[in-house]
Image: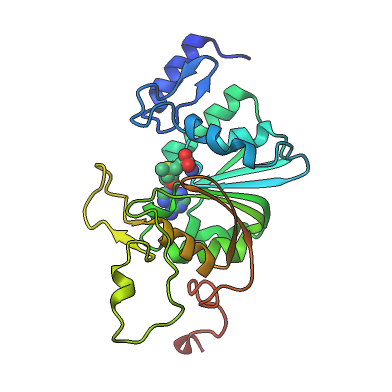
Length: 256
Ligand SMILES: C[S@@+](CC[C@H](N)C(=O)[O-])C[C@H]1O[C@@H](n2cnc3c(N)ncnc32)[C@H](O)[C@@H]1O
């Protein structure tokens, strides 16, 4: 049975506060968002760079929040869309949004560090707005590359610092400290306390930093349709040999 506008308004209030401003049957979920009509305004800037028809494709949305991007992928005809997030409150919002939109999308509680448990690769993986919330960002990228990216990864991160990208030396002498002073040297800024009132912001890269991290985790950057958005494909094995955790292989000695 279709919900009335009043019923939608009541559920939206009960499920709040919302980070995604969705339009649910004419009801806006986060009309006062500090970034404006978010993430629709961002989506409009890179939507054309993604396949318009996702028929026959599978999509994984990591850190899906209230499901804005999962909904858009389903609207493009994807066969299977799975949204994961480790926050039950956001997943409840996403499930309600899909119900109102009458779209068949699966949502599961799962951390990005546990993507191996899915046992499945996806044609399109969205990994948007999550990296800087992680204490272990490279581990997450390594795990995503190793376990779930089948073809395309759509990646986004908050970026701070220089937009320059310098030609970082592949190797430098120990005494050569100059490259570290270059504004375009790859950097991750560590947030010890809070940034923008959010205690879950940990590492904020500059542009050179995020691009280097993606490459180092075994991704080829194939597009950069919006300042913070990258299109990537799985490339050769990552520099460090892949995810270092969870450990595989030989049993612990004390288990033997
Ligand atoms: C800034 S929001 C981004 C939401 C959406 N992907 C977007 O781009 O609009 C970050 C989301 O990542 C989720 N998140 C943070 N750490 C996570 C983790 N370790 N595993 C899964 N989701 C996580 C948060 O719960 C939140 O929904």
